[in-house]
Each structure stands twice: as structure tokens, then as C-alpha cells.
Length: 509
Ligand code: 5AD
Ligand code: SF4
Image 1: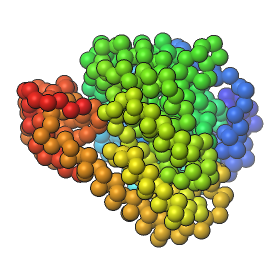
Image 2: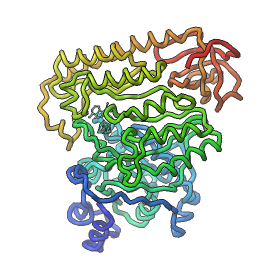
Image 3: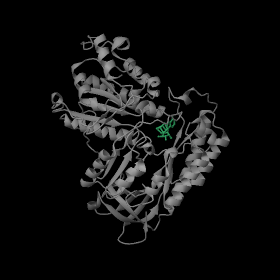
Image 4: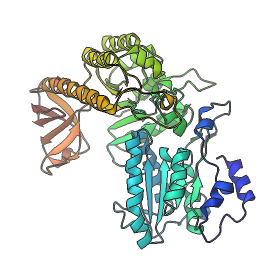
């Protein structure tokens, strides 16, 4: 719902802030559901670029003496949105807590990409009910991608009235207003703008670590792959201005960050929406590589928009890492066509060839969906053969999950779930086999590791990641945490490497 609709609605129902919850009224007047149908229309409406977000005086101190807890589901974009919300909470005077029992406000920052992601969130919503009954002053909110779906909002309104707030991906900057309204009103506060999206600058952030940082370069997606809900939940493609991004990366470098990841749903479309600039991801990376920060990555790429300029700039190396996540989704050109991926198997292989010619050491990882509607055995075999041909270092693999409102959800599907599960298992065995083989090549070599902290299972062991995103566990002094050190790999496992601190030896990147 846009600002105007909200205003109109509150005029339609001046009783909006009553003391009793009456959800039927929402359906009639107060609430206009977010609409996937509307979201699909990409209008000519200009993106509003708001460069000066600030928290109005009236909200300052709203959180004094109170604590917030945010549980994040899904992708890095969501993780980073959580950092922005944490920044807003902190600016309002709230303190962070990592226990739901301790919290005065709990937010679930949700993911809509597959059905099982949504089921997990509904499970958690149910678990929070007793806590809410015990502590009536507690505010519980649902935000993120699921809030952009009308079916989800309806279900929460009908079945989970203990939820106090629902707000969408376009409404994060409105958090102070939403919280204040939730404190004042006994009704569920719903603020979901079914719109194409703006760019808001100067948002506060409390980052999770001091070593690795995420930097949004663009928002939204215009690709409309037929299985995917993201273009509906995240709005249209819109890029941040290069100078804002460069400024943010410089600030992170000055604060001692060692690695940044540029974020977007389809980073290769960066800059396409600029009307006054002919400027793409390659140009941006060419400027960022001059900043004194050891590692720069980006995610996620779409093969269709991965252009020669970007390859040329990445080949300059330095702090631009040559580990590229390049989702392929399927190895069959027919399935790719049904997915509306806008490339064929041959185009993809040609792109991989170009990348490897320019960067002989480049490693690739990917995303694959099995069991797309009517996928045949032969088409699935093509996915396996493509995987062998490209020799990815690893992959995220998924069984296709129909998402309401997407074109693929309307396709008839003759592939039984049993077959889909078998395909996933076969693909996963191949992923494991090739990953183990690639890891083995590291044995005896020296890698550079950005040390993040203690390993999960043993506080005496440190853990960090190589430039190629390989997890390395090794014994070493705790003073190395936050720095890049050389580690000699003593043993390769399927998903990680064991090693010991090294002074000098042959270097592998
Ligand atoms: N079903 C299964 N997997 C999906 N993905 C996106 N939408 C779906 C869906 N409906 C996968 C794609 C994408 C990754 C983030 O999630 O592989 O690259
Ligand atoms: Fe979804 Fe395709 Fe956009 Fe990726 S490129 S977010 S898979 S629609």
C-alpha cells in the first residue's frame, strides 16, 4: 500500500485506533493487501532517491531501557537488512539481546524463496505465542519477503492475532513509525507497500562483525524467472549511485574491514537504470579496486548480464576476488527457456570459457533447481553433465518449490516428489564428489585465510575463509583474529580444510 492509500484508508476508518482488536475491519477498510499482480507491473514511476534518512526527534528515546531481538531467515540481503534495522533500533535507544525471553521487541525477518522457508517462520510464529501471552507488553513483528505476500498477511491476520506488526521490504526505514503505532494501538499494525521501491541513503547500520561487511549496490530484480518470487517481493531493479557506494566502502576500509561483499539480487544489472550515466558493475569494480581493502566480492550474478567489461576488470585481480557465484539453475536449454532465464546451456558454457580464459584460476560456484515442472530424466542428465563440464567448486541445490503468483506455479507438473528427491540426491552426490576432489588439490599448499574467530566445535582452533571461500580450521594465536594469515593445508575434508600457520611456502589463491 502506498502513502496515499494509507492516508485514504485511515480516513475511511477513523476508528482505526480503538482498544479492541477487530480483524474483520481490516479486510473491509484499513488494510489493502500487497498484491503480487500489482507488483508484477513495472510502471514508469520514477524511483525516489532519498539521500538524507534521519530519525525524527519525536522518536528519539523510544527504546530507552528496552531490548530488541531480530531473527533472520534467508539470504545475505536479509542479513544486511537486519543490520539496518539493528541500526535503527540502536538510534532509537534500544539495546540488542540474543534471547527472545529477554526482548521487548522481537522481529522475524523472513524469506519467501521456498515453501520450507515459510513453514519455518510459521513454526516460529506459533512458538512465540506463549511468550506473548506471558508478557503482554512484548511486541512481535514479521517483516522481510513473506510480508510482501498477500496470502501470508491474510494467514497471519486470521490465525496469528498475537502478531503486533507486519511490515514489508519497502518499509524498513519506517520502523520508528511502525513501532510507535504498535505501542499506541492494540490492533495489528500492517504497513506493506506494494510498490516498485525507492533508494534510501544514510540509513544507520549496526554490522554483525568488524572484519567482513556487506554493501548494497542495488535493490530489486526485473528478471522475472518464472519460478521466482523475488521480483514481486523486492520490487524493480534500482541502483545506488556509485559515489554513495564508493564512500561506504572507503568508510569500511578506514574502519579496518578486510573484506566487503557487494550485494544485489542481480548485481550484473547494476547501473542499467541510470538515465544520466553509462556505468555498469565493471566500472564500479574498477573504481573500488583502488580502495585499500584486501578483498572485494559480489553476489549474486545473472549469467545473462555478465558482460565483457566486468570480466576485463575482474582480470586485473588485486583485491577483486576471482571466486564467482554464477547460478545456472539447469543444464538443459529447454528447461532454461521455461524458467525464462534468457540464456542457453551453450551461452552459459561460453561465458564460463571467457571467464576462465581471462582468469585461469577462477573458481565457480552455482545454484541449481531440480524437478522444475515436467523436467525429464534426459533434461536432468544435462544438468549433471553441465556440472561435470564446468567443475564447480560447490553448489546450492534445491527442489523446485511452487510459489503462489509466479508463472511456474500455474504450470502442470508431472514429476512426482519421489523423483525430484532422487534427482536432488544424485546431484548432491556429484557436488560432493567434485568438491572433495577440488579440496584435495589444496593439501600441502599454503592459502591466505581471513581469520574470523574460534571454530564452531573447538575454542582452541581458529577458523576463517580463503579468497575462494573455503573454510579453514587451524591452530594459531588469537591475535590473528580479524587479519589475513598464511596457513598450510594439512588435510582436506569435503567441505573444509585443516591447516597450520605457515611462514613461507608456495602460495595458492
Ligand atoms: N524453488 C526452488 N528454488 C528456488 N530458487 C529461487 N526460487 C526457487 C523456487 N521457487 C533458488 C534459485 C536461486 C536461489 C537463491 O534459490 O536457485 O538462485
Ligand atoms: Fe529470482 Fe531470477 Fe531475479 Fe534471481 S534473477 S532474483 S532467480 S527472478
